[in-house]
Image (cartoon, rainbow, N blue to C red; front, side, top):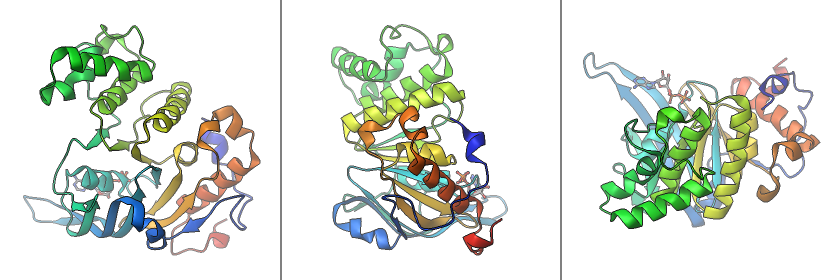
Length: 297
Ligand code: ADP
């Protein structure tokens, strides 16, 4: 991914490019009717158990995620993206506000929400097949059945022939494919991905992004994907929710106009609308909310 070229100064300060639509978190309430996840007025504090000191990571955040969408949450480092994802995963309880999935408040982790982290979290003493089947084993699925299911998702993740290898024999890209296959094998309704491709090299990352695009089209999952890369967010998302820091909240939500089944890096890089959208989002990410975009030189 040409991250460096994306950092060039944007000439694009005008209206949104072809097909782009911007809305606030509240306005995205149009999607409330068919929303899978509804987040209302969410505030998340970290409290130091020893000193009692409190740090507010997220405040007054509203967001709706539709049942069949791939939503990218984009923002600078430290703006609260991972904190938000942890709360949706059920690892962190809201200080204030609510997170509701299919009409029920999220009160803890659940198998219907699969999480893929930046670290692959594979068990080094287990083969690829056993790693991919681990969640199914923990749920008590018989061996033959869980291996069949794990094999199916390893194939979807392009890991043919790697079933009997151990994690130390795999490249970073292959390890992350195993982590994605393991999550998909558990048949979650929602996949929560926290910068899953940040640790792999640029070439592999582009391949993994194209694969994830293809896999998400086939599986029709709800995906919430955290990233600080503007290009990654546009490449993968149906919508991009831009977070602003201090404390984190949703600044704006942009619809991505490119057909999902035609998203390849060569196609998008050649499309001026992709470059214009990238520049526009870069401005949003780099300009403090209090400062008008035009004043950002
Ligand atoms: P991002 O994912 O956007 O990089 P994070 O959600 O990791 O941001 O962090 C948001 C804010 O919360 C940051 O100021 C960070 O320092 C703080 N933070 C993250 N984790 C903890 C923690 N366990 N304890 C205290 N503060 C934390």
